Amino acid sequence: MIDLRSDTVTKPTMAMRQAALEAEVGDDVYEEDPTVKKLEDKAAEMLGKEAALFVTSGTQGNQIAVLTHCNPGDEVLLDANAHLFLYEGASMSALAGVQPRTIQGERGVMNPEEVKAAIRPDDIHFPETSLICLENTHNKAGGVVVPLENMQEIYGIAREAGVPVHLDGARLFNASVASGISLQRYADQTDTVQVCLSKGLGAPIGSIIAGSYEFIQKARKWRKRLGGGMRQVGMVAAPAYVALTTMVDRLKVDHDHARKLANGLQVVQGLTIEKVETNIVLVHVDGIDETAETFLEEIKRDGILAVPFGPTTVRFVTNYDVSEKDIDTVIDRVLARFAF
Image (tube, rainbow, N blue to C red; front, side):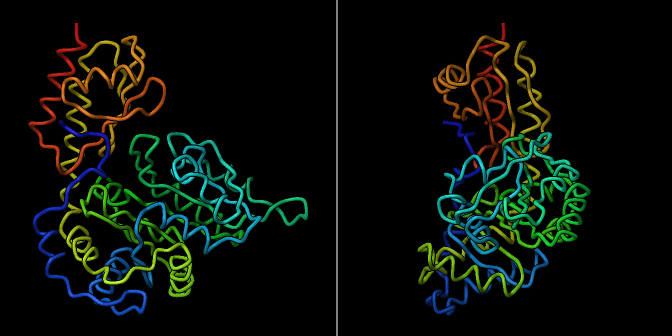
């Protein structure tokens, strides 16, 4: 099978496996694991933040940020198609007791003036706006790179209002490679940021949240409360360190493969392909009288895996374990089945 369901399906490299085998470890709940400390220090340096914390997943990282920034009854502003809103099991409501308030962006990009207007005034009838969440790249929009200028405008508005900004940067590495803008410049437009190491970078487990020293100390307690305090976790942090320090630049290959896939599929009359910016390709199949589910069933018979992204939209995600030859094979098989 050629697996294009997500970049989360990548397998750890031999270098990662060897790093896990040789990792120096300690009890991380006591903050005594040297490999975790090394990973956290490196991540904080790359993101330009005072401190960082290793967490089990992107969802856990995002929810720890919400729990740390907010109090029950507060309100969080975010895009209507944000991962935090659509794909994290309503955990900000279930765990933090906060109310999400969505703003309809354009391909994941919120209008700063609409964000400004949505910040609640001081009124006993309203919840307090305690956090603004951004996402870059934007998953549901198809791996769109949210412009730095947009983030700067929203961050300026947020600072004026005294509201912190959290960035779901699960694929921020892709945004940086695609735009040429450093991770730190993006992270500078936020108070806190979460980055995922187990997507395009290929680590087996883990994400990083970063922010001020004070924030990370509070976040560490929330990680413990959620059951995320781990012991000899250097066994996992070691491959994550390899991912962070050796796998970023190669993301350009995934982006090239995504563009090649999009260009190849455009040959099929009736398929509509959204503009590709990073490693996600969104294909609308209603023009060939297919639903996402029927299309996926057809290509699965040809040894290709992808996921539904709406009733008539299919998502392909290029990743480390998919070669250029695999992309050629996918194009050939889709054309053989659907091009007439």
